[in-house]
Image 1: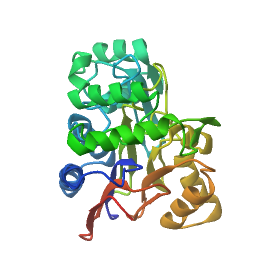
Image 2: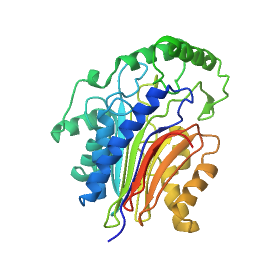
Image 3: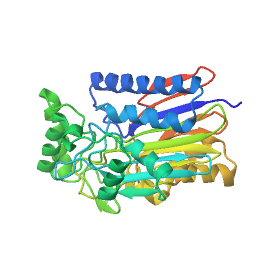
Image 4: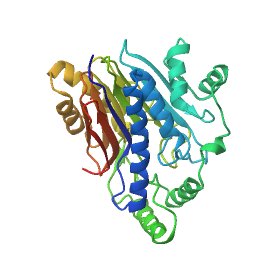
Length: 334
C-alpha cells in the first residue's frame, strides 16, 4: 500500500489588498473542501472519486470562480469549463462553454466514461449532460450580484479585472475603481498572447490526488475571465495544459490560461520528472520558473509516492494540501 496525498487550489494571482475577512472566508472554504478529500481518502476512496467530489464542492460554493460564482462574459452570462484525468491509463474528459450544468467537473467525468470522446463543448456538451441525466439549472443560478457589479466595473474600465472579488462597498469600491482606472491605461505592462491587457482574473479551482493504491487523478474547473469574450476557452479543460495525471504525478494549474496553454504546463511537470529525473517539488519549481516565459501562473501537484508540491510566480495562490502522515496546510501567500 502506498501513501495517499491531496492538494487543492482556488486560483493564483491574489490581490494583496484583498480584505482580511475575504482571506479568512477563502481559507475556511479551502479547509472544508480539503477535509472532505482527506475523509474520503481515509475511507479508501479512489483518487478519481476524490478529485471529482472535492471540485464539486468548490463549484458549489460561490467563494471561488467555478460553478456558482463563475466570472461573467461580456454578455453577462456564464460559460464554464472543466476537465478530469485518471492517471490509470491516462483517461480523460473535458467540457467547455457549459452554461446550465450544475457541476461541470461531473460532466467532464461522464465524457470520459460514457462517451467515445475526450472533449465536448457548448451545445454538444449541454445535450450530452441532459442525455446523461445530470442536474441542470438556469444560467442565473451561477450569477451572483457581486459579479454583476464587477462586470459593470470591468466594462466601464474596458478591461479584464484582476481579483474581481474585492467587495463593492465603501473604500473597497474606491480601491477597485482606482485599480480599474489605472488598468484602463494598461500601466501595468501586462500582455496576453502578445497583446496588451489590463489586469487578469485567475481564480480557477482544482484538485490533485494520489490514493493509497498509488493511483493518481486530477481535476480543474473554472468560469474563466471576468468580461471575457464569449466563446473564449482557457487552459482548464485542456489536458496537458491545465490538467494532467499519470503514474508519476497529478497536476492542476491556475493563472494566465494563454501562457499555461503555450507551455503545456501540467504535462511538462510530468515530463521533467520522467526525462530529467527530478523529484516532484524540483520539477514544479523548474516548470514555473522556466516554462511560463512572461506569463503568470501557479500549480498544485502530487506524486505517485505520496508527495505534495506547489509553485507560483505571482502574488499568492489559494491552496491547501494534506498527506497520510498527518501533515495538513491551508495558505494564500508565500
